[in-house]
Length: 288
Image (tube, rainbow, N blue to C red; front, side, top):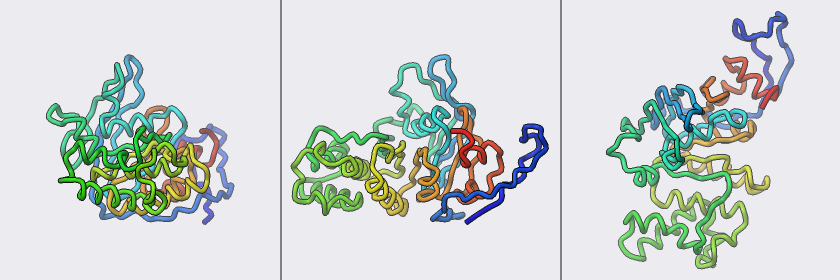
């Protein structure tokens, strides 16, 4: 799929008056967005401060359910900061302050009545580096359901563990060694174990902060396949520096720059016909 670079919006050019007519080949977008998908998370005028430093400026964004939304942009642009606002992970950072409103299914996640621990069960998190607990494979997955009281007895807990590992695409590889340390798995297996741990508590949203950046290409491909399978059941938001990965796994894309949301839309539109010159410059590698 080739496209001609669009004419820059008024005032976006440097002043030369030249029209850029190079032909570029964007990464192929594999999945289209569902225009009827209901909104799961709504952010309005969200700003984040770390002490006196403002890291995020007035971000407003709708995130649809059962869809993969990719957050892209250069390092330090606010992607991960925004990701953490959705399950109040910024609460754990001294001096962090969030203003604005974030709603999940119409409920303000920052309301005093919302227990952050219960919120994080509904909004799971997968980090850049796999972080299995120093426990067995079984206990890694069983930990959440056990502390949240989701299983009545060991047979039901066994079923949750097996089902979660199957959904994470890991069961066949570990079924005969459930009581071995989770830290003994390969990097890609550890990341899938962490995903199994997250989905074991039946979350509604899964946040992923560069989940493949520490993995080899084969493990990355397996995680991307898994993300595509999981989107049928969950709202997924992924931070990625890889334009090709965003094109492969997401249906919606939001571009951040210098702490601001510059543009959001269907992934195919962002990659083939962005409205903002800064978006074009980033996805074509002029900065980043």
